[in-house]
Image 1: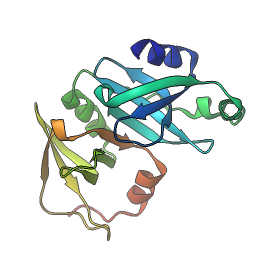
Image 2 (image 1 turned 90 degrees about the vertical axis):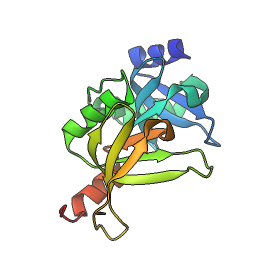
Image 3 (image 1 turned 180 degrees about the horizontal axis):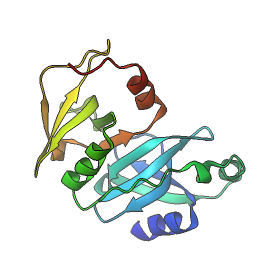
Image 4 (image 1 turned 30 degrees about the vertical axis):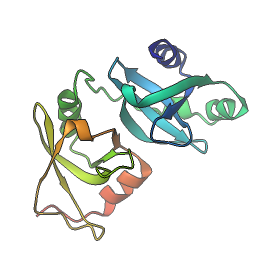
Length: 176
């Protein structure tokens, strides 16, 4: 799998990734990867829709996509729109520390639809060796007073700079 990912990064090719917890493949342009983490920007309906970091161990299959729709993406200039975020993929701690330095809202989730499933959107407070300290907000844009401490082994997906997240960030109330 790593060889296909490396090729997609080098050639700036669209890649389809099938994860264990998704029924359908998701489409990405690869930014970086290693044996543990995949970092890419999602493509959906001929537009970029946010940056994601996912666990390699959750991937079942992947392939480079070279079809008419991927050619449309090129004609639409999607590759030129990719922002060169520099995120250290050494560990979840380094990933969250780099994302914390951006001082933006992110989302984290566990996409396995089991008893531990969750989706949170908010800001990183602290990233320690084995857990993330995270402050989220409610559906009315009010910041929760309590800090969530989430063990890294519960997190499957990290998202940032998506239309959904950026819209929340635009209208969210100031932190108290």
